[in-house]
Length: 144
Image (cartoon, rainbow, N blue to C red; front, side, top):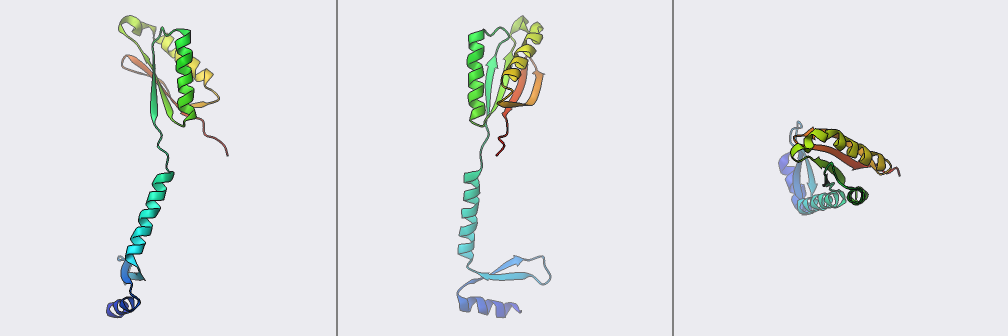
């Protein structure tokens, strides 16, 4: 229908004439309450933001000579992070001449991976970043 006729119908109903598909030939328009439409769109986006979850990466730092009790404490922290649906980044720090004991660092990371087999999935396998060894663990997806 002609534009003038569509505007007249919209005005009679007290609504707005909104162009829906401008690239179509001829352009497609819709008669609606534009303010109400914008409000509903904002509410939808607000609901979507409310339902999304933000995953954080929590970091645990260890040394190659970390004692058993401290290791168990750090392990409990990692389990807590994973239970809160966060990722855990495990970093082994090497200071000074400790760098020659990289194999001990790999053993520690393997031990952590073995002890967290039920709770975690290795997202990034152990790799060297300068003087550090880094491994990233993610919580195992829950089957519903």
